[in-house]
Length: 245
Image 1: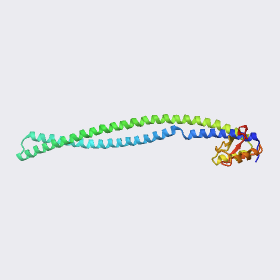
Image 2 (image 1 turned 90 degrees about the vertical axis):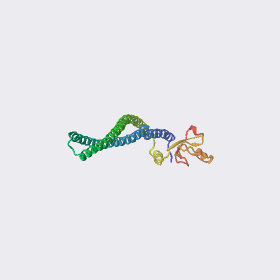
Image 3 (image 1 turned 60 degrees about the vertical axis):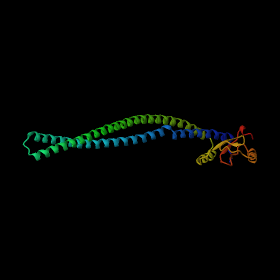
Image 4 (image 1 turned 180 degrees about the vertical axis):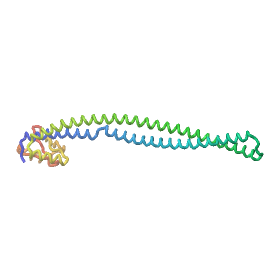
């Protein structure tokens, strides 16, 4: 295939423009804010789980407090009634002895329950502290998340603008290259390879492989408008005064 040497040289500008687009795309895929947002989201979910567990524990402790408090209240009422009976007199000795024994048992049981009630209250305080800590942590992380999302969006906007500039330049260059030559270049790009490279210092500018003497001699003998391709990577080898041929 043949193509004007100036058109072949334009492939170098096109390859440079494609490299810029690729770098911009890489920036878009590797934004540090994306990883930061993912980490913050995971931490928020985990802390929210802690908050839910604390809320459930608080509800359980509230029910336990009410149960124990109800028992304490019931025993206190029973003690008052028994004490009133005791103070009223007129009881048979056996009934009097049983009543005194019951009062002693009620007092001991109430003391145990009151200790249990204090324990529940202490656990409630600890759970409430954990709930407040988790709630504050979620709020703090959400603030950080909002900031990270803002920075991500700003970075994306900059990248989108840079990509538009790079793509516009790429399209302008491609528009001046003959269709058949551009097709060779684009097939290389579609295969995930560099489309064109400058031949310089015996090396292909696309794959960086050094060419042997025989290949260089063959290239040197080719006409200026011949489209020469690298035997290693298939890129168009663009020849200029820097090629040393």
